Length: 566
Image (cartoon, rainbow, N blue to C red; front, side, top):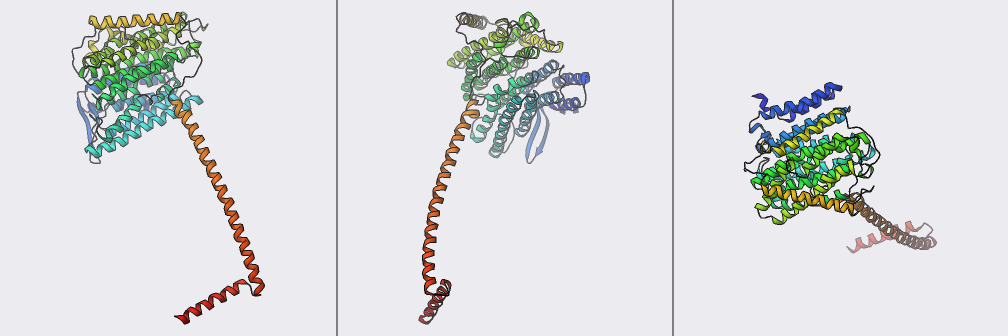
């Protein structure tokens, strides 16, 4: 029974420690065994609180298990295994150890039963994941990693302050439903929102993920935002504000993704788009909506990981990732092409693929609860994701034009990892009951009724038709070497320039005021000096002993006079 008390993050931390002192195939075996053994252990753990102790008068629960945490625990183990297989060819101790610690930190966060434990793993997620960016070992990656770390640590700092306010208001650190009542609820909400890539706070994701290593991006895409989704589902279910935030997240990245040239950055925007569906489901808050959000998070880890792996394979083999420089790769990378199409079909919610059985739950919940306009916006977002991730990614990477690049498919381990992810995408799409059995609520939902299938098929058909027509007419945004401005332009360029000019004005004004003051002071001192010279000359002419003797005599005489008068 003592084995049940071992939190799921412990095997990953132990695996990271062993990996740090091993090399070659032995390290690879240890890294693969860690998620397998961890998943088997987690499968045997019953629901409940398995670790609890008092700290400074508060009850801490570092290991709490229920259906919601188990759902994310399972998919993090699956993602870790797939990512480890994908990275078996890597010989980089820092990157591999950081990846294991990062996966363990994600597990620690989703099984945390109190806000203090959550904060610890929240910050560990930041400090371990940044090495997956720095491992690229370029100046750009270093700068991006620093920006990423600052924002992630800021999120943790806000979370800690919110937790302290929450403890003061409620006398407890228990991590349950919090809501937006009081300053604590808002602070924790903001902290979760930053890590979830809410609008305006999203640029850390599109800035950092494309600059991470080929294998590091696969880990990053699976865990950070999903931990935030889990936290929102735990603390803010049914918060209506999330519905509107989520629909904004689902819609605005489409416009950036369509014009973006870097295909990994396209997938980063697409990741925000998919998280938007999850946030909407959490905001609606019904059993069906929460199931839809959680199941879509589960599926997104797999199919988004698959798409990042295929684009990583392209980058690994060609050294290029811009759509304007690629094309025609289907001739020499046929296996990667097919696997990419499977991921594209999954994220686009084609029937018989995983995205269909989860995304439709959120949209059905929106209709059932009267969010008709939200449903229409999500419908637009569904068409948009088909354009930029379902069509653009495979089309411009493998088909658009012949770039003349001739490379083979990636190493066997990378193909194997992609094949496992693709198999899961198809398996979940064909047999969704296996996924539904793990969900927090039993809603009896059936995705394959005539209405859902026909509506989604028509949406995909007309979206594809629109893409073809726009492309033939030359109206679809071409792939051009360019830099697209996002909100980070304000704090990376606009605000620094404004502050620079403002402070330059302040310093110039200060300098002018001080100079004017010094000029007038010098004039005043010159005047006093002139008066003193005249007075000194006058006193010196009448009294050979000098002015000091005279004034001493005057003072003494005055003192004697006053004494006699008294």
